[in-house]
Image (tube, rainbow, N blue to C red):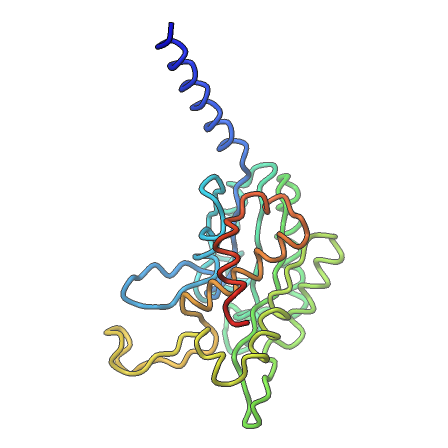
Length: 258
């Protein structure tokens, strides 16, 4: 009888675990290189979507579809959105962040006009909702672009405002990563903001023997700080995803750069 009780307990625990996993909505991420996975262990570049799972417990499923060099335009025309759309289930979440390639006129095939950018973001929102999924819009993260007077100069123009406009029109969550990252980089200033970005001297990594001074992309430290802005939003707004947050990791990030 004792063995039977043990077997029934283990069976119940297994069924409960399976049920929890099945009922946990999947988080899908779409965006550009600032969000994308950079898994090369021999190179320090990381996207904030790559490190986002570190902030959640093991029950939360996060799939990062972000790709280097993509814009809203190319993500649609290369059928990457079709792939994500086909996998959406009712209750899932879609985190959307583009802008670094949309706003550069010289990037032929990737540049989106403000009107096209708005249309494409709206398409992601409408079609996510049509599948019963919940879109979350994010403004693009600031570039580290200081002038000779140590003043941070904006590079995204009106594009972040378009994201805000779409979020307001469709009444969907907006995580203003642009404001958050801008305020942090301004606060840190020219020198102290460098450790967020992909900067390293010559002969540090074999794949970049001449070194790197990249003021758009992040190392792991910067990627985690950017991811923490997203997680902060969840906790501050009592979002449903907040119940899956790894609070220890979040607290560690909140202490850094203060």
